[in-house]
Length: 536
Ligand SMILES: *[C@@H]1O[C@H](CO)[C@@H](O)[C@H](O)[C@H]1NC(C)=O
Ligand SMILES: *[C@@H]1O[C@H](CO)[C@@H](O)[C@H](O)[C@H]1NC(C)=O
Ligand SMILES: *[C@@H]1O[C@H](CO)[C@@H](O)[C@H](O)[C@H]1NC(C)=O
Image (cartoon, rainbow, N blue to C red; front, side, top):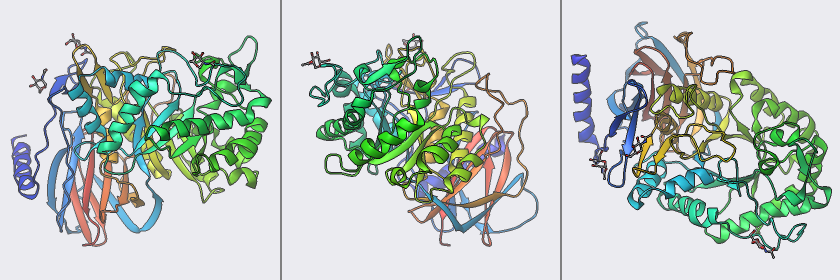
């Protein structure tokens, strides 16, 4: 332990000579159990993280761990490869074998997140925005925004609820949620972001007058006479946000249509819209596609699905894959990761073979604790995220958008009482916010894998160590597999970045590329991002 600490001090001294700004460290506080830690931020203090460009012949590591490291920096020399079998884990890189190009990482500006953000004192609001979007934060470049309400709102509502049956949408205007909460947060993010923010919008439900609700059920669908009106509803939203200075990059074909199709859900008909296959095909081809291809004089990206990945075969086989006219309107598939432990990642590869010109983007994921929705400081929540993101990235996702940017300590507000965890938990009483382990795990990807980075082939040469009695976050789902433990990219900074998750005891890992080698120490239950120059 003493030796370990000494090496940390040396690392620190070396880094301070190659870098300029010292990171502000985490202000630790115990979470809801003794082995759980959060980092506390308030109006005057918040931890920061600067990226250090790796010097020639050297690598930089960033470590976050269950024990409490938060982007702890380390450095060392790149050496000639020695295959002496002394490593717990060996990862071989093949930088010439390339896969998807990254578009970005981000989170959702739900009403819940933005209302909680606005409840903070001004200074803390700024620290929050910097933490997520700035050069001294985790540099998010994507935001998802619900069009009107989602369940993470104080009540369900829609644009143009009145007058009813108004095909021309004559009363489509800003809500209080837009002007007071969502737009200010998104514009604040755009001001400090290190790259252009791509905003992705999704409708949970149009106004009730556009829909039929099945008697005795929450299943609902669009009325035939409002197909074009519902397409225009999206374009009106694009115009509304653009007028406020927030350009929209993409829109989806409606959030989680499976919830409104035949299921009895807690979201009711107010925050769902169901589609039959035939209806979706007609609407996409005749209304939504043509409208979004020329909305406000711009081409808006169209994301199909916006639902769980087990539904991809259905969209491939019966909706998009069968009709070239429909396919031309789809730029990519948006996936939610809630049911991932049930469905193999190979589902993505198999189905996307039909769509070489389309991308896969993760548009929603969240987790919750088994005892309470928000286990404060629980590293296990971070591990669920680490594995989910790694699995998505090796399945060629071009990005990953997390769900609520922030929530309250109960995991709300949510009008349907569907409480979950978030990377930042806001305490409106004390004017503080707590960065959960999830926040740091997300940052290990978002900060170090900038837009336009390209994934390269990376192969683990040694079997993964894993603890079979791993706690299972969702009691109802099968145990997570913990088989996805690394991913590697060539970045536009002409560096290689490898992100490694360690779900086990402390160990060391060797990263091999060409005739060179980087050796990194992996703390127990940790995530480590390693960056080094690509051209040596
Ligand atoms: C803000 O946090 C810092 C660091 O933890 C602390 O020293 C300071 O007292 C806090 N300020 C307030 C007003 O709580
Ligand atoms: C426009 O919408 C607002 C908010 O729902 C409503 O109060 C108002 O009556 C609507 N105007 C018309 C003409 O229906
Ligand atoms: C929120 O702050 C209040 C006031 O400082 C404190 O009593 C309460 O325990 C805090 N809540 C959490 C979840 O930390």
